[in-house]
Image 1 (tube, rainbow, N blue to C red):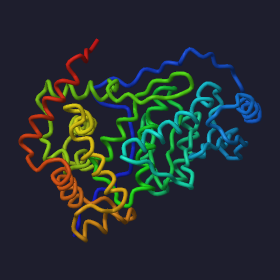
Image 2 (cartoon, one colour; image 1 turned 180 degrees about the horizontal axis):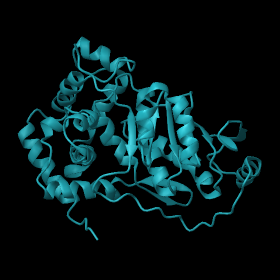
Image 3 (cartoon, rainbow, N blue to C red; image 1 turned 180 degrees about the vertical axis):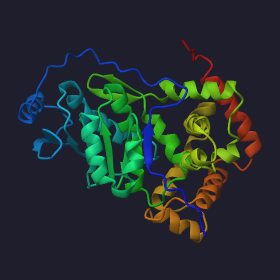
Image 4 (cartoon, one colour; image 1 turned 30 degrees about the vertical axis):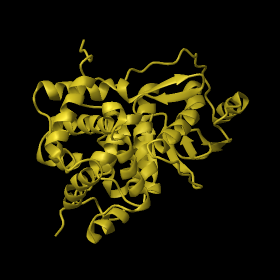
Length: 347
């Protein structure tokens, strides 16, 4: 019998590193208490990313449905600064997800995002939306999750809320559009490239090299000599590690997969970037050279992620597309990790 780990995508701020600062972008925020008032406010802004704003009837509080080119945002958040920026942020993230590939793809079906103003509203929705699994989701202290095609979050401050939406949005993007599911190291590693960003002149630019949350964890992991060997790193998932080890090992998994994706894209002036993009493109189109059994699991998202599938496919893809010389790539990867954390300082 195949062992399975029922692991949904959950992004929680925890661990040794610091979470991103919660800083506004110098724009004052007026108070608007009604959905009608907020809808009028957004319409008057003539925001390029917003195609439509309507009131959203729901049992959690006054709400809006904001439509963009690729998203439908259902929200009870009535905060002008955040709501005027979230549409542009999500569309910027969509372009960023596409930039992981050698050529862009398009979808005619919009992605669904739920964003609640209060945790109490989020919990009420989650209990209904996740059903029997709700106890797992309610344990989230500050974060978001992706399930059943939707990203579900609540307001934890502007920077952190945008960060979790960027992370979970990648899971949403590839789960819908890729023919094959991604192994954990690749899926989580890419998602973390969208946790930090810069806002400038109405546009968002993602800057993985400024992710002090993951860089801090990576520096601690290196200092404590607790780096997970590369061959193991690409074969496990965080849920499996949480069951068998501890929270620190989970933090190590996340910061190391974040660094691994950066390594494959950036190291030695992007020497491996084309190979990395081909790996993703073949996952998108269902062209990986894996066994028929593993292809079936890769295609059918209704089959829970199995430990053997992840253990087999994760290393196999790295070997086929990047290098089968794990010893050499391990050394180069460790040097890259040390280089990117060199200037990270703890207060």
